[in-house]
Length: 458
Ligand code: ADP
Ligand code: MG
Image (cartoon, rainbow, N blue to C red; front, top):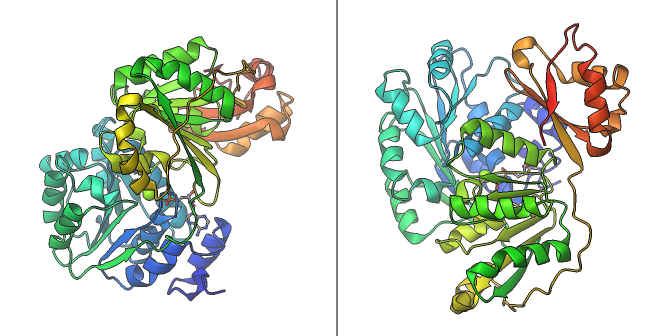
């Protein structure tokens, strides 16, 4: 097989690990980038959303580590805390075959104290957002002087004003002869020029996947004016009946407004934006990922990078202020060979932007009007989540929970969805029709010989 991972200079243990992860063969961007990346060259990689860019740099970070050397040796910078968390999670999976690799997530929105503590214990790979990383450098807690590989994920975003200054300052702390990797689905000329100044003879790998057809179908709808959008969303939901959807709005206030509108209609929707506490943001994403929430109404904090399996539908309730953000928003669906639908609303006044969007998606656009819905049933989420007041600190494992649910609460294993065990709480998705009864029974029984407080949260 020409696109097998076996042809790469990777240890056999990693090849086995990739098989265990279900990665049968390389995606086009991985095939194009990995030989260069693993050879230590500087690379700028551009490929579609959902095409597997994390693995294209992640394998290198794990491969070139000296585990016995307790200093940060690799650094990944991301634009949002959620994405940093997700990238760290992906790296941990790639690192499973190597013992004792410490991957630290250093992002804002979490208390800084525990980050001091984990830095003291030493981390090999740092993943985070620029603000918090600079903060830790200023406080004398983070020493990046041994970092010899840096990655900018969503690189074009990271090199925009606001982030660029921080990124430059952080990179000045790292080794000057380090390997530098940049990945994104979109780049523009200005960004390419900046990138060039901070890299050594980078290899440009672009459009490795350009001839693979997009798995996303685009629908554009005209609304007379902004005020008509809630009704249009409602009609589109009845027409498409998506199992789940992500709705993008341009402001936090409007996100909340649309979310309230949908909740009033009986849809299980939640908002996600930067005014929310980090805990709430994380919980919302967990509930959306485990399919306990049908609709996520988000600002562009959720536009970049997030990988939610099988998410079938994205709505651009508002057109984004920067057109390339459209690509990133829409790229939350149709990931890794799945099919996706993109639904975009344009007000009559915005119709002059049609040619811009035709250029962007390389297709002609036939704008339609959405007809009034036929009042079908509302799509309820498949699962409901129970939150338990116990987690990793209580040495809780998935097996303990599955055991308690099947043995004490009489739940079929097939009715149990995702289990997310965090340090002090655990989220368990249960099929909606059995959730109530199961939680009633489980809260009266014991898990690991203890009664655990729990409640349904949506
Ligand atoms: P991108 O950063 O390009 O948007 P991600 O790195 O988030 O995409 O990967 C998208 C999804 O594809 C993830 O769920 C990841 O686990 C999966 N994936 C990555 N590489 C492979 C592969 N070689 N085979 C199958 N799935 C893969
Ligand atoms: Mg990515």
